Length: 391
Ligand code: ATP
Ligand code: MG
Image 1 (spheres, rainbow, N blue to C red):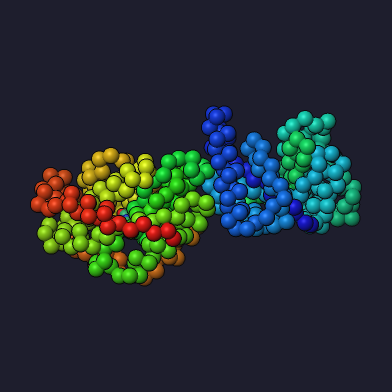
Image 2: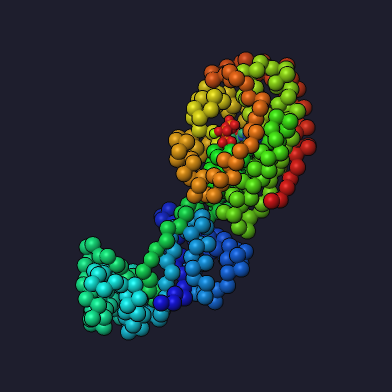
């Protein structure tokens, strides 16, 4: 059976928006879909955008369906056969599909979803198709079971067209990328921050990853890993900029290791990261800073310490999509996103981390440690020396 079309369904959350927002989101999603297909050189003959759906006619059904499941805002897709809304034609195509997919002796149900003006109801369509399948495929010993069928044949009638299909592939859901403003993401190359970035993207924020290079406290492989993770993440944002900031941070870290209480190293390091990220957010007109922190996941991420970290960011919210995640949940998601394998490559990590980091840092003490240093100068220099690369 040769499929010639793909039905694309929009995320349920888009459908419940007010009319104006829904239209804007659907338009944006249609644009993202076209950009993705173009990027992958997937050709199509026709793309029809209706409320809540896009119907794409193409010779590359499998590839199109597969690519579309990874576009934010798409809730599901189905490879389908296009017909006109003429009932005889719908019946003929559905019987052909049933003939191809139903096993001898199996049970089946017909389901119909109909939008538009037609001389028949959805129930008429189901009844007629069921009758014809039983009659035309008599020797196959099929039976109808509406409650618990082994197979379901589906018809979607939409105005002058109809689509016949059997399979529905789950899409990634969320909101179309670009429906929210840009977010700056602190991307380390580790498992967590990559997943946090992806979750922000899933809700519509295009991301600008910022990586802090702590050479000589790490190795070249760690730096390469961060860029590889960024590259993988950008596969989910076809058509959007693939810009990454690389901020030199080794000298800053050295200053903390040498001149501040050792147990505060990670807190001081992270507070400068936040402040530099705020400066980049300003330049990039982003609206928030995303990190991969989760409560209690590391010594620097106890709720006490997160409060001390937060105080460093004064203009932008620090958003932590993984706040309540278990590590295993984060890892599962990283596998689905495709970053897990890259993030778990054996690399040096950070060799400046103290043996006994503070788990209950006190803001006054951290501020006092900062007063002894030229934090403003550090931020200025880091921002000035930051490199922007396109990956
Ligand atoms: P991850 O798994 O994301 O590497 P982690 O669990 O190892 O994080 P930390 O090292 O405390 O924990 O980092 C917490 C968060 O701070 C990271 O999720 C990331 O958002 C940010 N971060 C840490 N190191 C860097 C870095 N070198 N460059 C950019 N962001 C960083
Ligand atoms: Mg972590």
